[in-house]
Amino acid sequence: MLEIRDLRHDYAGRTVLSVPAWDVAQGDASLVLGPSGSGKTTLLNVIAGLATPTAGTVRVAGEEVTGLSPAGRDAFRARKVGLVLQTLHLIGVVSVRENLRLAQALAGAAVDDARIDEVLASLGIATLAGARARDISVGEAQRVAIARAVVNRPALILADEPTSALDDANCEKALALLTEQARACGATLLVATHDNRVRDRFARRLEL
Amino acid sequence: MMTIRLAAAYLASRPLLTALNATLLALGVATIAFLLLVTDQAEDRLARDAKPVDLVVGAKGSPLQLILSTVFHADIPTGNIGLEEAGTVMKNPMVASATPLALGDSFRGYRIVGTDASFPALYDAKLARGALFADEMEAVVGSEVARRHGLAVGAALTGSHGLAAAGPAHDDHPYRVVGILAPTGTVIDRLVLTSVESVWHVHGSHAPGRPEITALLVRYATPLAAAMLPRAINAGTAMQAASPAYESARLLSLVGAGVETLRWFAIVLMASAALSLFVALTSALQERRYDLALLRTLGARPATLAALTLAEGVTLLLAGVILGLALGHGAAHALGLWLAEAGSWPLTGLTWVAGEAILVGAVLAAGTLTCLVPAVQAYFSDPASLLAKR
Image (cartoon, rainbow over all chains, first blue to last red; front, top):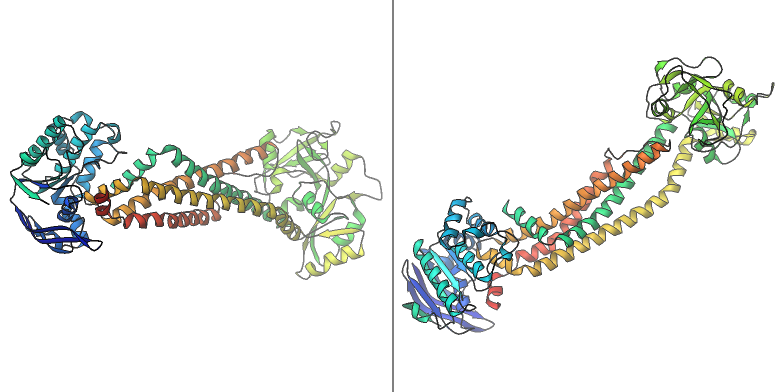
C-alpha cells in the first residue's frame, strides 16, 4: 500500500531525511520513531504530498505521489489521506460539524451529515457537532481531529506526534481511538512520534 | 460557497475590528455619496431653474444677488427698476420675450411673485385646477405650496414682507387662490403667482406715472443678443443685466471649493480605510497561518487560500460600501426633509446619481487591489515548512 524507495530530502545543504526502502501493507498500523529533528514530520509531509523530496519515490495505493503535479498532490491528499497533527487541530472559528464538512468539501465530496454524525458518535462526541471548535477542550479537539481525518474514509491516516502532549491515560485512549477508527475504515495507519510510550503498541516500526 | 462561509466566519470572529474597518470605509463612501447627491441635484435644479431665462435685467448691484433673488428666489432683490426704462428692453428687437417680476412679499416662506401669464409659460407650467389670475388680488399657487399648506381654489392667503415667514404681515390684503399649478420640478412649484398690479396694490407703492418692477426675465431672439444686449444695458442704462447661466456657474465654483475640500477629506478617509484593511488582512494572515496550513493538509489548493483571503477583504469592502451608501443617502434624505420643512429647494436621498457607480467601482477596484497583496502571500504560504517548524 505504501512503498518508499531511495527517499532523500535535503535542507540547507544537508540531508535531513533518508529512507532507502520501506513498505507498509494495506490496513497495517506502523510507527515512525525518532528523536526531534530526525525528519519524521518531513517524511509525513512527503508521503502526504505537502513537500517534494530531493530524490526517491513514494507510492500510495498504487499512485506515485512524488510524480504528481502540485494540483494532483492536493487532490490526492484530500481524497486519500487523513492527517492528525499534534497541536494543529481545528479551524477554531467554525463549528465541529463545519470542520468535518470542510474536509468533505475539499475532497470534492458532497456534504454528508449522516456520515459526520456517524463518525462523531463513534468517537463519543456526537453532542459537540454544533459547538464552535475553539470552545471545546483539548481532549475533545483531538477526537474531532481524528473524526475529520477519517470522515472521507481515506486509504492512509498519518498521525504526527498525536500523543506527545497527553498524559499516560489519554495517550492510551488516543492511540486506541486512532487504531480503532483506522481499522473501521480499512485505512493504513502511520504514526510518527518520539514518544517511547507508544513504541510497544506497534509491531512494525521505522526508526529514523 | 465554503470559501465565503469561512471568510464570513473569520470576519465574525473579530467583530470589533471588522466593524471598525467597515465603518472607516463607510464614512468615506458616505461623505462622497452625500456630496454627489447634493451637488448633482443642486446643479440639476439650478440648471432647470435657470434654463428658461437667458438674461435678467434688474437694479444695479451684485449680479449674483440679482440672479439668486429673481431666478432662484433665494435672496432679496438688488432694488427696483422703472417700468418705463424696462419697457425699452422689452421693445428691443434682440428680445424675444420679457417677463416682468415684482417681488417683495412671501407666503410662509414661499415667495409671492407679481408677474404675467408669460411667467408660467417659461417653465411649461400647466394649471392642475382653476384658472390663471386675471384680476387684482387673485393668485395661482405652485404645487408644493398648495400641497404643504393644503391650499385649494377659493382659499385665501396673506403675504408677509420679505422672504422670511416671520416678516410684517399684510393681513388687510388677502389674496384669493384661483388656480393651482401642476408640478414641474422647477422653482415655480414653490412660488405664489399674482399680477404685478396686485403687488403694487398690496404695497400701495404704485406712484402714478412712475411704476416700478423688480426685474425682467429676458429670452433672446437671436444668439447674437448674448454678446450685445448685456453690454448695452450695463453700459447704457441705470439697470444691470446678468446671465443666469454665468452666475449659476460662478455660484457653483464658489460652493465647489468647499465641496472639493470635503471630497478630498473623504478620499483621505477612504485611503485610511484601505490601509487599515491591508493591515487587518496582513495581521489576520499572520494570526491564522496555521489555519491556512491546516487547510492545505486537508487538500486545499493555494488558489483556495488566496480566494479565502480575498473573499474576506471583499466582504469587508462590500459591507463598507453598502453601509456607506446607506449612510450617504440617509444623510441626504434627512437634509432634504429639513430643507422641505424650511420651504427650501427639494433634495432627496431616494435616488441614484451616475457618479455613485464610478464611486462604487473605484472603491471596489482599489480595495480589491489592496486585498491582493495578502491574498498572494496566502497563495505562496508553505504548509510543509510551517508544520516542520511547529
